[in-house]
Image (tube, rainbow over all chains, first blue to last red; front, side, top):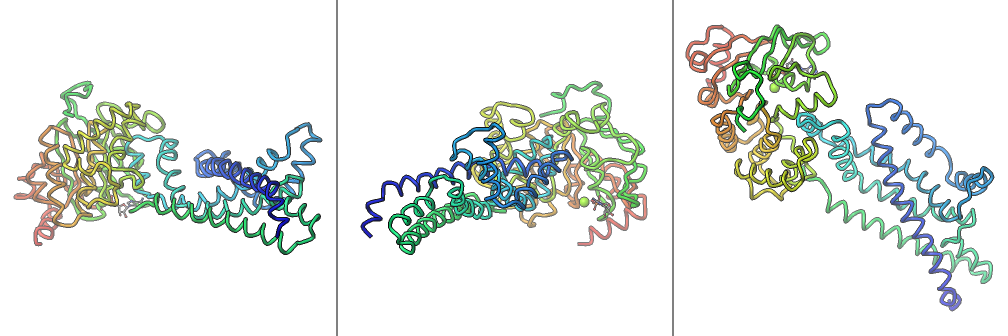
Length: 214
Length: 256
Ligand SMILES: Nc1ncnc2c1ncn2[C@@H]1O[C@H](COP(=O)(O)OP(=O)(O)O)[C@@H](O)[C@H]1O
Ligand SMILES: [Mg+2]
């Protein structure tokens, strides 16, 4: 057990990277996913198709493939970014597709009569989306979005495969030295569980606070 | 709030003018040869059996439904087809629905202040101050910070009226505003509508409240099967209905 305490520094740093990946990509994917949903329900056919294509693409390509492509192919094409920002961007693009699906599930809960009332008040379609449809859809989709955020946190581990030193990568390195796989990966697993629990509880709180009473 | 504040082109000309309007839903002919003029300040009550086209007529007046043919002009201007001009027209025509349709995720105050701020670009502070005054006028200023789901039906409908008034409309449309209410809440809503009428608001009210129709209406329109069958004064309508269909409708509705 002592070696765990001795390597607390690097592990804490790696955990910091995991949290950075999750928070940055989490915020990014919620913003982008919401915009994709707005495009998906807009009256502009090109936007609808683009949003549909986006979601289909990212739901049907493995995240690991995307990460490897971004890390190895993008520099070849002349895009040079450090590893961690690259992983954040890929995670954001990838999870945004799932956030978009989650938000879209909330769109159905928006009151038809409320949309009609907004039109009768003179709202343009964009204003109705911004003021009514998107806010109500997000509120209805808090739990599913929370689940996407949990999946995102687990998916940050894949960044290890392309060289980002996050929690799983740090655990792996430690294990190479100490050869204590059960202990080390159980500890890492417990940390991921704690993160998932924190996200789940936060989502539950938010849901309770923001739930729409009809 | 009175019609004198509107930039009337010809004060004597009708505010609403409906000519030869037809409306179909697919093959279903729902409004037939509708001709109708509404003067400024006039209170028109529309009655008739369910399915006769009352709601559809109302909804055509602010173009929530499009008509198949004919013309509708409001204040001398034909209803715009779409875009900014249509949104502007809708802002001038307030509508109150049977099911209130308040924005469930916003407070009552926000419900009233939102449209002036977003549609008419009134600064938020001013929009809120005006909203408070309107909530006072309809008697629910103490509910300003509540959410719609926390209010009774009667309170929600009064908030919905305040929300429509916040746009300073030239015309108010009420589509069965008390039909979804528990009986004990009907009068609080009708009182608000009556006070608006007393202030000179031009309005169209679809209702089954015959007492209100007799008291508040300048004119009663009886619709049946998509047509305007009677268009007369309340006294004429209730005491001397000419058509068999109106008499049959009245005897049915006044029986209970
Ligand atoms: N959106 C719609 N699509 C198809 N038919 C409709 C629609 N709205 C109303 N109708 C039909 O039009 C007729 C008139 O309806 P409505 O105007 O709601 O009557 P009222 O308000 O007098 O009860 C009815 O036969 C109704 O079924
Ligand atoms: Mg109706």
